[in-house]
Image: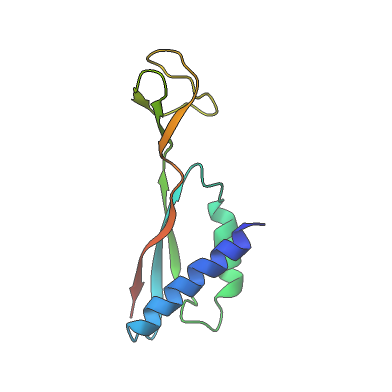
Length: 113
């Protein structure tokens, strides 16, 4: 459900930039979403399809670029990609670490006509 306000934000950003560029329509929107961001691609697409009729983005294609979670171990500094929900460092066995990647969420680019 929290994808609705997020999708409204995506649409607002895309339309603002398209209008500034004098576009007649938006053809593609490229999104970057980290695996820890908690957003579901299908839900964003669902709300996008509901919100866009009659806008510059009607018929635009959404592209989802997923960013995998990447951590730096608190204990030994080893960088690793955790497996599922197991955040155990494969180097030293410590649990957890600094999140280096995976929380991203932004509009990377839009394509217009």
